[in-house]
Length: 173
Image (tube, rainbow, N blue to C red; front, side):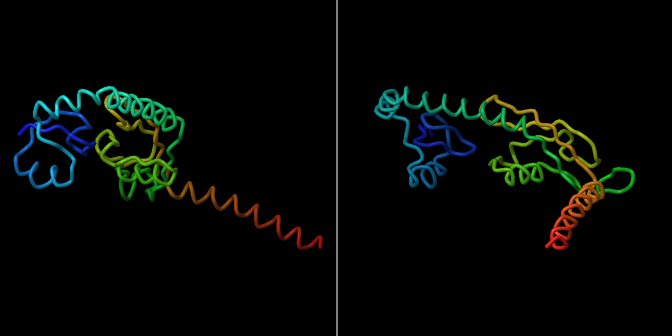
């Protein structure tokens, strides 16, 4: 059945797209939620009048994805994982791990949009990861995986210096 989408539908298309879907999918999901309408000459004419608005919206998404691409490429992804002496991780860095890092940094990146070569990272080191944004916009991100022992050693050095400063202030009072 041919339908025209009223809104962006995940895994199907964007507003104004004409798609072929199963009758039951349209009848039971898309139509009751007002996500799509049947493709008739009247609905085609209606969406033709809104074409400039739809194109402006898509252009805004393209601009947003380009600015997001620049921000993601500027951000250094450093992930600490438990690893053995030879650099082999006890677990693995997956697309979910990278997505969680971005979530903590304030970016909403779905795990399905993160593409890791070989699907997982199992050793420490630097890797190039692709993040698919909108249409053909892809951000090449450098991911550095470090052993937790290295990260723990650095964290221990920093707090030790901070602990000494308050003790000196207490003595001077």
